[in-house]
Structures are given as C-alpha cells and as structure tokens.
Image 1 (cartoon, rainbow, N blue to C red):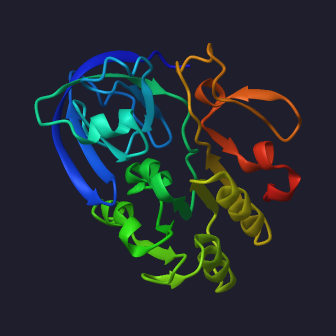
Image 2 (cartoon, rainbow, N blue to C red):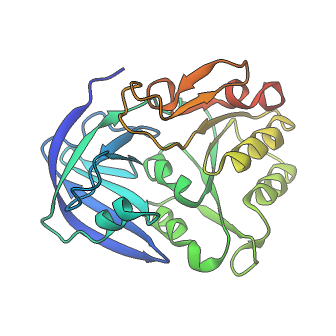
Length: 258
C-alpha cells in the first residue's frame, strides 16, 4: 500500500450542486500527489470536535499537484460541516488510500449512481462514456459536474424527469444491445446497481470492475469497519484490499467477463 500523507489543506471553494450535493475544492502542499481514479482520502469534518473519525471521500479531480476536489452529498454532520466550510477553512486530509481502476487498452464505459460519480472525474482521458443514474432530475447535480470535466454523460432518472425514464442499468442494457460494446466497464454506486451492471455486462462479454462504498474509521485496515465478505466467503477490508475489485471477486461467477 502506498504511504498516505497528512496534509493541512485550505478550502478554496464550495459549489452548491443542489439538493444537498456539492463540490469542495482544496489546496495544500503536494495534496494531489499520487492521486488516481479509484483512490480516496480520509477527511476531517472542519469545526466539529464531536466528529472524531475522519470521513472517506473518493478523489474527484486533482487539477495540479497542490489542488484536489471532492464531490460531497450531505448525509450527516460530517458532510454538512464540509459543505458549509468557507474559503480559507483549514481541513486535514489524509491520503491517498486504496487501489485504482486498471489501465485498459481500448474503450471504457463507466456506470455511476449518486455519489458514485466521484471517482470518474479523473476518467476524462480513460472513459469514453459515463452512464449516470439518479432518482430525479433535481438529484442529478453530479452528472453536470462530470460533464464539466469533458466527459460524455448520459442520464437516467427513476421518475423520467430527465434522460431515460428508468434505472441506469436499463440505460446500460439498452446501449450494450445497440452494438459495439466497450472493452471494459467501470462502476461505482449502490451495491445492487453495480452487481446488476456486472451481470448485464457479462452477457455482452464485457469485463467489469467496481469501486465499493463503505463507512470506515481508519483507512488502514485496523478498525475493520469496512470489512465485507467476498464471493468466496472470505473477508476483505475495502480500505486496503480495494476499493476497486474485479466484480467476479465480489459478486461471483455470474459477474465474470471474458
């Protein structure tokens, strides 16, 4: 595992993306070093002494060696504190942690749901298409954040208020059936969505990797808060063994591609 660094960063901007979603940009000494698609950082909740544990966030962008950005969804007091931070607020960032999505020769698609969009901001030079799912158009702010990186993003909403009326897995099945499947599929979001995406992809001979999401307290595999059982019945810590896995390893043979 690469050595994580502790950086005292400063918030440079917080952008409201609607419905409790936001983009947080920070700067700090070499904070963008070794940042790649799939890796994550452990970040403090600024100004909240009652939030003892750091929170995990996937890197969204690393525009330079000294700048990074996260996509954040407000789900509690820790995420609220980060989204409420003003420019100049000091935030401790520990990272990077985890492995990365593999380098693929050929075409790559990505499937994302909700905050699962975050890893794919770094995919602008590696993925040719991103399929993004949300419950409704008002919760699709992360799709626009992805588009701003130069990615081609297609949207599906459960209520049909934007893009395809249906789930993002319906959109994936539709696009794969139209022909010319990609050489690989990357996924991040709700577990059920990733598993179904892998099952759909394998029927078209497309190998899939997924970035798993989990609550975690340390990032070093010590607290075991992110331990999960793999398809073979063994236990793995997402923070040190992942977060990116071949889907056959975590979802079983039904998700194994060619």
